[in-house]
Image (cartoon, rainbow, N blue to C red):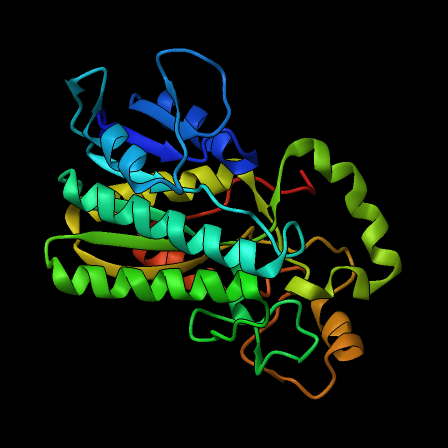
Length: 283
């Protein structure tokens, strides 16, 4: 499905830059909406905490109406601990409400939004109920993850109000670029260094692939869905059974853990989106 016009909020961020590039390479007209970015025809500087600016931008710039086929919402304070808890919650909830509501008002019916692996119970100071974890494991343990969980709940109600609307939440794992992989061999020395997300990650290029596939599915299928988006493997060379026994003894394991297979289940994304990670730090 080519030739769509797509707005990407937060397109100047780590994942956003890759998403914008991949969508453009796929033949789509992409507009980056962010507080900072490279000046040009593909970027609009906008304060997404301001509903008026958000709606105005999605309706058109310079009085030129611009109909978007899809909105990809990535803009957020991207992790806990960057700003005070209340600031993180207020920003992320307000921005998500503004973007989703403005997109609907502008006639957009395909929305892909960035949720987070943190809603699964990260940093797993309380062990997960089972391993691998899947989308049914929803247990926010920080203000940041609570905001992401509530953004998903907002989406659920919006698609109930608008039966023709598709909103898909991608629970991205820790986003990595190829230059980040040089650090990965050091993780083996202490399995607790990366236990906080069950040793998971996602290559930014595969994150962008998931966005593209979610847009394509959203154009066909209305409603709300959430997916874990992670690499097919862990950040470790040590085998999964050894890691789980050492760090999470007594936690129920479901199925074959594999040797280095992801412990953040991507079965749902594979089944419904056709998502298949193409990149690994091991390559």
